[in-house]
Image 1 (cartoon, rainbow, N blue to C red):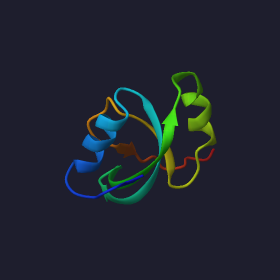
Image 2 (spheres, rainbow, N blue to C red; image 1 turned 90 degrees about the vertical axis):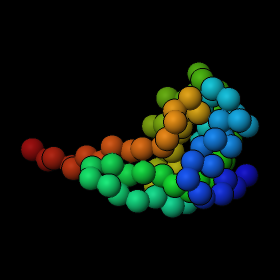
Image 3 (cartoon, helix red, strand yellow; image 1 turned 45 degrees about the vertical axis):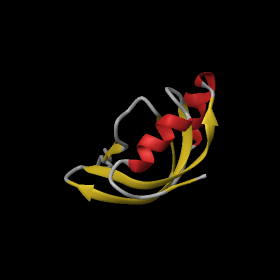
Length: 84
């Protein structure tokens, strides 16, 4: 299911279709602001049961991520890789 870009439309739609639950999604468009990546466009891949959310999160790579629909926006904190 493709969620269209535009203000907070995609987040609102995903919250209505999958209320208060985890979903796996693919980031289609985003932008960087400071040390945050703000997701604007996304495609919901499937709902994820609560008991599998952590496992799915650790398996996520690239543009796929796990999101809980109770959150207002999808904002990722960017960290620099510090190697010792």
